[in-house]
Image 1 (cartoon, rainbow, N blue to C red):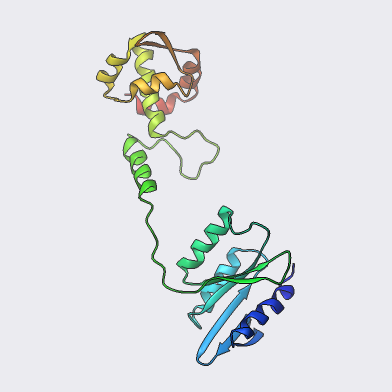
Image 2 (cartoon, one colour; image 1 turned 30 degrees about the horizontal axis):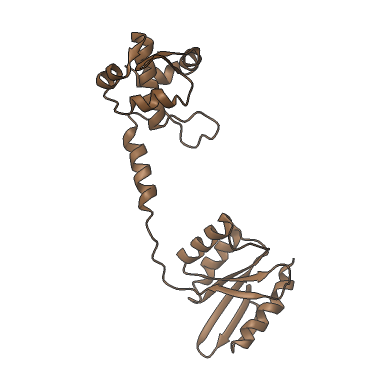
Length: 225
C-alpha cells in the first residue's frame, strides 16, 4: 500500500464530518478545517520514528493532530499496536486507521486529548524487589548476550559457595549462616543444576557449579567475601 492509496478514503470520512480537506499543504500530509477547528493528519504506511517527529512538529500548529496508518487483519491486538497507541496518547495525538485489505474502512480510533498515565504498581514492586535484592552491581548496562546476575542468582551463588567451603550442609545451617530465608526453595528448585540432595534436608554441590565458579570467579569473588 502507498500513501496515495490512503488519502481518498480518509478525505471521504473527513468531508462527511463537515471538514474542508486539502493534501500536501506546506509539507503537511493532510489539513482539514471546519469553522475555527484546524485538524492535521500525518500519513505513513507503517508506524515509525519519523512519524513521531512529524507529529511533534505539527503540534506546534494545532492541538488536533492525528497519525494515520493502515492495519492488517487482527491488527488491533498485537503488542506493537498497543505500544503505538500508548505513545500517541502520551503525545496528546489521535489515531486514525485504514483497513489494509479493503482499503475503504477508516476508523478514528481515538481523539487527541489530555492523557493521564496509569502506574503499573505490580511492575514497580517487582523492579524494586529485584533492585533491593541485589547486593552489588555485577552486570554491564546495555549487555544483551552476557549472563545477568539477578537477585535470585546472587542468592543461589552464595548458597553454592557456602556448600563449596563447608561441604555437605543442611538447609537450616545455610539459612542461619547466610540469612537467606529462601535457601530451601533455591536448593529444592535447583534451577541452575548446582545442587544435589544427599538426603532429606542435606545438600551438596554438583560438578555444574565448579564449571560456573571457574568461568565467573571474578564476579563470584566480588560477591563472596
